[in-house]
Amino acid sequence: MALSGKTKRGITLAIAVIAGLASVLLAVLLLVLAVLFIAWGQAPERTEAFVGRLPYGNFLLKELAKLDLMLSDRS
Image (cartoon, rainbow, N blue to C red):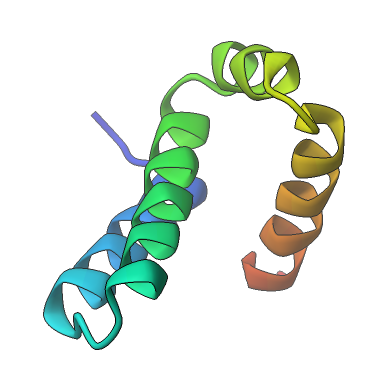
């Protein structure tokens, strides 16, 4: 199974957090972001539907899309 770019970024972020647990709160926030990217890479429609149902979900989806654009390859 080939991994998408979002999944790879999520895994990389998770490894970075686990490797450098400097702050518990920061580590938890980054792990949540990593899980979102992994899930988004594996099942984008279901993940967007789930996040959209959360409080401030539409805002979160917009910000995640912006972050994805910043982190994605520009080729």
